[in-house]
Structure formats: C-alpha cells, structure tokens
Amino acid sequence: MAVVRDLRVLLRFQGFRRLLAVRLLSQGADGVFQVALAAYVVFSPERQTSAAAIASAMAILLLPYSAVGPFAGVLLDRWRRRQVFLYGNLLRALMASVTALLILVRVPDWLLFVAALCVTGVNRFVLAGLSAALPRVVDAERLVIANSLSPTAGTLAATAGGGLAFVVRLAVSDSDAAVVLVGAALYLCAALSALRIAKELLGPERAWEHPRLSTALSGTVADLVAGVRHLAAPARRDAAWALTGMFLMRFCYGGMLVMLLMLCRYHLTSTTDEGLALLGLVLGASGAGFFAAAVLTPWAAGRWGPGRWIVTCAAAAAVLEPALGLPFATGPLLAGAFVLGLSTQGAKISTDTIVQASVEDDFRGRIFSVYDVLFNVAFVGAAAVAALVLPPDGRSVTLVVTIAVIYGAVAVAMARFERQ
Image (cartoon, rainbow, N blue to C red; front, side, top):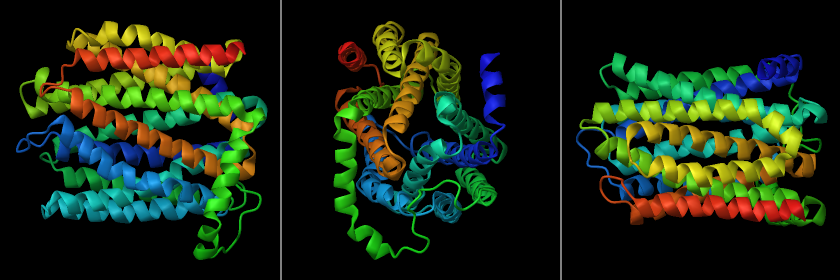
C-alpha cells in the first residue's frame, strides 16, 4: 500500500519520527479535551443547547486567541520551536487539571470557559509550530508526503482521543472531569516526548536563546507587516490564493459541524446519550475521510499539482454535500461527514504544502499563525451564521445550499487562478 510505503520512508528520518510523536500525543490530548468540553456544554441532560449557545461557546474559546495568534507567530520565529512544544504542553497539562477541578466543583460556565481558554490558547503556539517545523525534519522532495501524513495522523490521533474520551466517560459514570484528566496526562506525555528532540533542530535559524518578552513583542507590528509583504509578493501569489480558499472551506466545515451537532442532539436521536454516541460515529466517519485524504493527496497532488487538487476537493464537496445533507437522515449524513473530512483535509494538505514551499523559514511561524487565526475566524463566523439560520432541530435547507454554493465558488476561483 502506497501510504504505508511512504510512511516507512519518512520514519527513517529521526527528526520526523520524534516530531510526529509530539504531534500525535498533543492532538490526541486535544481530542480528549474537546470531546469532554462538548459533552459537558452540549450534551449535558440538564442543558437545553441551541445553535446560538454553541456559537457563543466557540466564540468565547476561539476569538480571543485569534487576536493573540499573530503574536504567537512572531514569537515562533524568535523562540526555539522545541522549547515551545515542551513548555506549551506542560502548561496545557496544568491548565487541563485545573479545568477538571472546576468541573468537579460545578463553577459558573464563564469560569470554566476561562480555564478552557488557556488550554486552547496555548494550542495556537503548538499547532503553528508543528507546521512551521516540518520542513526542518524532511527534505523538499518528501514535503508533500510529509504534509499528507503528519497533519492527517494528528487529526486521526485527535479522533482517536475523542473515542478514548467516550470510553472513559462511559467507564467512569459519565464523569467529564475524569476525561479531562486523561487529556492532561497526554499533554504531559507530549511535553516529555519533546525532550527527545535536539533544541536547535527545529529552528528557526535566527532564534534567540534567551529573548526578553518585551523586546520580542515590541517588534511584533513590524514583523507582521514584513510577513504580510512576504506573502503578498508575486512569487507567493499561489500561497495567498490557497490560504483564501482554505479559509472559505473551513467556514463551510464549521457551518456543517454546528448543524450536525444540533441534528445529533435533537433531530436524529431521542436521548442525550444516543446523541453523543451518534456524534462519535459522525466524528469517526469524518476521521475516515481524513485518512482517505492522506492516501489520495500525495498521488493526486503529484499528478495534477496541489492547486488543482484543491479545485477537485472543493468541486466534489459542492456536488456531494447537498446530495447527502438534504435528506437529513443518519446514513447520508454519515456519508456526508466522510466527504467533508476528505475534501477539507485534502485541501488543507495541499495548502500546507504550497505555503511551506513558498514561504522562507524565517517567516513560517508568522504565516502559519495567521493561517491558524484564519481557521478560527472562519469557524466562529460559520457558527454565528448557523446560529442565525438553524431552527431548533438543526434542519436547514438554506444552510446546506449556501455551503454548497461557497464550495462551488472556491472551485471556480481556484480553477481560474490555476489556468492563469
């Protein structure tokens, strides 16, 4: 099998193996933490969750750190990335433990969100750093393959972490606090795994060994302007177009996810436990789509180019999502989740590759942090739109058709750019 052969080739690179271990443990912990939070906020029997409540929770958790994201990029271009993985995961382990305690004592929701905010905020550094560090551990010839397998393996780890969260929750009498503690243990393992990587290996080249925070932040505006100019240069137009297309596809993903949450909670099941179990199946189907993208993307991007593969993914989603989503039935929606995972991850792998190949190493931290901010803003924006459109049971023809039109627009715009 080609994907197995490609993985064997990449695993010969010691740096790649160790960076992959950090990614798997970090994103596995993310999956555990996110499912625990979703179960507590959305699927608690005593709560009557609405699309507006889901959108508000997403905004509280994501938007404040979208403002912090550019600062994360500047620091990633100044600090040793290995140190970011070490101390970032240690901090997340501590804050996840605090979150578990807050769940046990049943504090007000706003205080719980503040604690969760700290965990997800550090995530901005870790995920952007993982993407920025990848070209440091593989050669240029294998960068597309690495971008197919490494982020996809991380996404599958997050899916597996979500599955582990379901198992722990069932085994420990629906205890969301116990699930969060499992996530904290995985964050700690990720921090210890980072110690196996040489401090200088992941760059950047001009990293400061002991930079003062005030000094680093004082140059943020100038550094961000330099990063935007670097991305806007004619030689990097393909990266700018790919990021724009990925922003819109992420918007579509966010809108569909909120709709699926509401359908699982109210339309397709009669109890919260059934709704949570169905959500697990939906996430599993989406994870299978991520895996399929990892298998198909290296071949497709190699044959047609990453840009044309983004066109194909967007066009397929434009056609298949309404066909599978409009019946609002369990089987077609599971198939739709698979298509959503395949198209989104296939486009993301291609976008990552285009950006990494176009952007110089000293700018990658900034660009990938901005990339991360675009992801969050698109996701929260989609949740806000869904809150306005979705009825209480989650069935909305308008939302499904609107998302299909956006996918189609991305396919057409990217196809025109590729022809030019």
